[in-house]
Image (cartoon, rainbow, N blue to C red; front, top):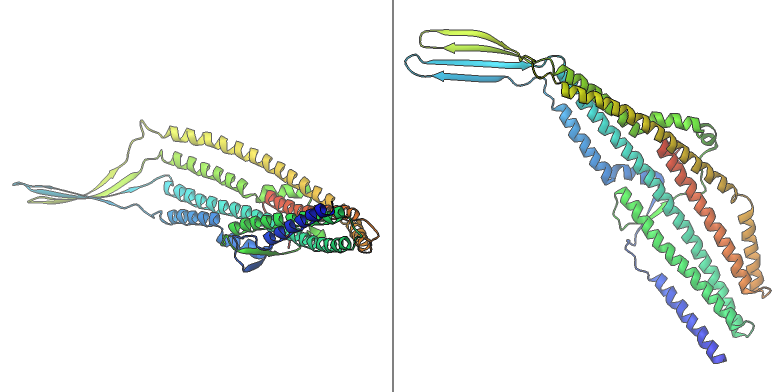
Length: 422
């Protein structure tokens, strides 16, 4: 019986060694060199290198080129005609059409509004990227903190395993208790392996947003416990103030309002198109015995087509624009309220962890470990106390990360930065 239990004990030790080897030599798709980066630098890099933003910037160049390409005046038209024979004749006609009713001015305003609209889309995309970078940054920071804690737990658990092994060899501890220490250590190692995988995924997400090489082993520098200033919380983060800011700063709402301006300009252009273009020309004719010069004027008569279809369609679009603006304003208010409630909830959750509970758990864990080292308590009691401590610490880190993510969501709902959170 003693031999059988010894084999069980050896089997668990071998399993533990293999698991440790896996952690040490776990394959990584990331480079060995670590790149340390702060939140501010991450945001600046993403706003400069993000592929989505660069695509929109190219669209801005295209629209700006179209605005610059609107000619001051259209090109004149030259026509010539030659008739041979005894009475040979040749005529020249140079004509230029002039748009009336301010049509060219309306087209310029439409082009400039399109440019402003693309700029607004770029600002909206930049705000979205900023939010995503903040969320990815704090997710990576959360995993880093958890992994650091997990490695500390592995060290403590290894110490308990070594003590259990010594006491087992001296006959002061049963094989069941010795096996339990190895099982507990393997559990801690598995948690570390899972966090290593999450770390790489979080690094991948941040690198992608930043437009950086995906294999970069990114290490973010920051403090989860750093929160918004008291001044911001008291003065800026009131629901009424946030609603007002959102309706003034949200770029998607600005884009819809620019759509309304576009429709108004297109309606004016459609009405101006009713006024026919005036063509003015100079004539010159030459024959065998004489030459003649003259002036030509021409203007279409709007008898059948008065552009009513375009005018009516544009007026209908104005109603659509009004409905979209009203619906978006309501949606923005709902988003602000939801983000504000989420942020307020995380603030309340933090109060449960920022008292003495974590400190007391830490002290109790130290006392229990000391008692175990002195042989005054059982291993199971240490394991239970450590699990409770880990659960509370991980939950605290989760709430801290949720606080920063909720703040980023609130800023995105408002459409402007409330306060840079380090």
